[in-house]
Picture 1 (cartoon, rainbow, N blue to C red):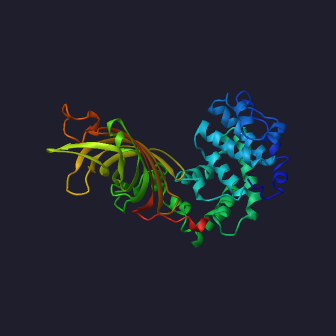
Picture 2 (cartoon, rainbow, N blue to C red):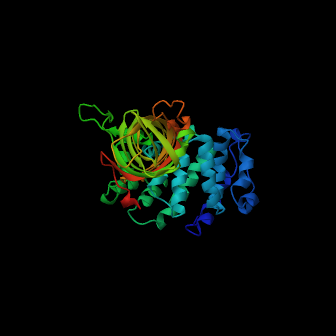
Picture 3 (cartoon, rainbow, N blue to C red):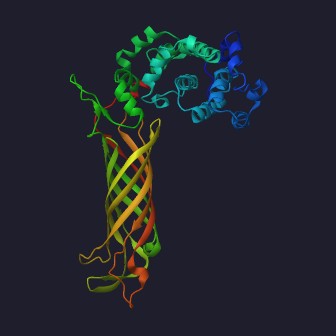
Amino acid sequence: MRRLPSMLPLLLAGALLAPAALPSPAAAQAAVVLTDSLLVEAPDFEDLRGELLTLDAAGVAETAWALAPRLVELGRPDLLASFLEFWADRCGESEPLVRLRILAAIWDDAFDESVYDGNIADQLDAWERRDGSLLTTGRNDFDAFTLTFADQLLPHQDDGSLAAYFCLEYSGRLDQAAALLAEEQLADTWLAWFRAHPDEARAQAQGLDYVAGDDDGGGGLNPDGPTSLLVTIGSWRPRGDVALAGDKVLLGLVLEQRLPAGFLRVPVEVRVGRSARPYLVAHDGIREMSDRFDALYVGLELGRPLGRLGPCTLDAFGGLGYDAVRPFREGDLVLGALNANLGLGLRWQPPGRPLLLGLDARREWVGPRNDTPDARDDASDSLAGGAFSLRLGAGFRFGRPLPSAGASR
């Protein structure tokens, strides 16, 4: 991580950090104080992790009030980034954590709108309305540190930029920050949209689609939410009797419609190629050998998001579809089977842009395709079994337009 500006650790040291270096008396038993030599000499965060693993969530938070500022003072942004991940993992997202993550990203010249989500609207409100008399000494010392941190970063930001807005906000210049956010150059940012639409922002943070109500109300989750289309490529690895088909490359399309509680997907996939060995086709009186295994799958998948981290969403889904194989080039014979599957998927959409990337892993169960074998047939040629499949997709999400992050980069 880049140290910007070079004099920042010296400017932040001294009287401000002296009280912050020690935990508040009430939390003395809960917090861990690490030596400067360890923080300076540690090659990576693993040297600190062992000292912190024994802490409960409250202890991690109390330790953070002093440790995070010291990592800035000592010029260890690498350790700071890892500690923020540890803090979030042990305590969950919080306003102070997100505040420091934003300032650290600005310090490292790595800031963009992916460092926060729709929760930022409520988090900024919490920052602006905080009452120091209700907070611990350690938390008040931390807040004083971020005020100074933002103040020192501000002169190094481009005028009118989103980074400058956060420096104004977190240095306590709330009126100037509000005036900057109202200017045209920030109108097309996620932040401006989040602050203007707090209900929609909360829904977006949960991976949901929200439509605002009119003057008579009526706002809520949008049953006609965003639609996406992905072009996919992947791998299909059969198991059981159908393993004779051999591994195949998948090519297809996935059409997705967001629903109030989840999503509906329609995948269409083709698997083209010959089987690993010839197999018996026994269907409607036909008894011939073939080594062709051109397949088409059309399905229906229902699922819901399990969680969200920044622009990434983890999904779970189940599917049911028709899996058809054409064993001969000539003629219209099709061997059809039921395909049931369960899967997990990831979706990544950069803030404010329609681009969508997806990755899905599925376990499939495929029914028999041939007629019931008799004594003359090889039972392995029932073509029943299962498969593991992986599909990678790229495409676009359509629907209610959301702001672009281009003006903030």
